[in-house]
Length: 574
Image 1 (cartoon, rainbow, N blue to C red):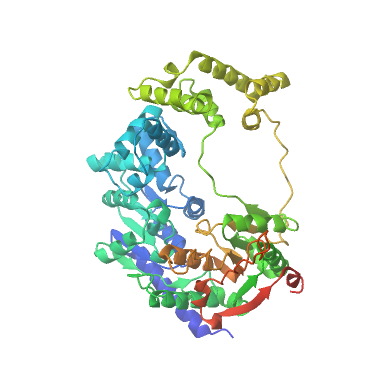
Image 2: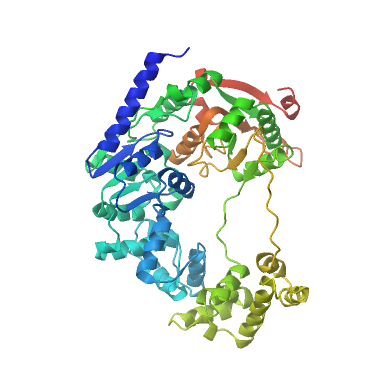
């Protein structure tokens, strides 16, 4: 039964919290709040409060750029950190390429030169300037006229340290997901503080990206520094009451067992004016143990079939996936294959691997026939290691790579480039050119044809999405950040997956579990499996079963519906 007095109290409190932030005259504001507490709404209100002048919104997650852009509707205002750095570099340095594989190329160059240089990206991220890695990287990047993600930020940071005017002045700066930034990025943000009023937002509970030297310690330090006026919005308009209560209880146990030390304490409450109906409808978190990953896939499919029309309609209207499936990629692939049998509106994009190929080389050389990077990549695929090492050594004095390569190598690839130009163009495309390419590049012609061959424009698919069917998105634990879904399935909820080792648990793994839980708008399913494929090795020895995740033990039973153990045949009975 709805409680009008409670609803009014929550509405009044949330309005007051929002207005306090938006109307504050403090030049430095810090929002520390949990998932779904309306930070984007606050950003929009802050921008509208002072619509004149140049604005900047920075976030770590590319997905959030488009979300925030749609809300604030100011062109070229919201950027990822790397987009921001790239734009400033263009202003300072002129034309250059940004290639994510630059670190791989430079690491390989160091190996060929016999140099013991390691962890280039980490050196940038941690601002570790004591070794030879950063100078070597910068020199090679200049030679290739190419930057990657970390060194682009580093270059701007060094320029701005010498001259603050490198950074534009803004009438409002907003930085989101502060807990996801590393030391290099934090130091650049400190310089940005001098270029206009700044609003920073983040949550130490959601720090996921330790692999790029990010740490929750930076938001904790900022919170306790006294330099910023701190605000803590507490009402969650995304999650149901059971999710909010389960998360609060989970965090208490996390701290009781010695994790999340120095955590920023914050209130977190379900905003019932928005979430009461869903909270009544979905009162428990379902936990199920499946026999194998195949059974997991069948279970997810069966639960997807049972989602009612209202929840499906709500998701299409709200612009979020009806079903969000979160887990390791090797689980997601199996579930994706099973769901494809029945559901058409399904997206699964595996994580990108930043490797380079012949296609990258030819693409660069089509734009610039003297590209050092283009010829460098071709050299990797065309000549032996000793000759390649000699060429890299020769390039140390800035000699163009085209001047160091054997003439026959240059001639061969120039002919290939001419063929590529022909097959790329509608007017000059001929099948005989494709056959010639096949003879010239017998091991790689398929890749080149796929990337460069002219293709007639395919007719646009005018088919409307069937909004009576659920939309489905599959993603990793880290990829879930910035997303939400109606019905969320967290896969791999057993020791050995999340966490990888119950005796050596990291705060990041706890944050991954929390982030996955709090993507939920309606119903959460925690799914484990006792074995990946089967309980027996090929030589008929039994494999020890997986234990359910210790994280589930940290959620009080009052919030859980334990479905029990399911074999494949059991799923059809649900």
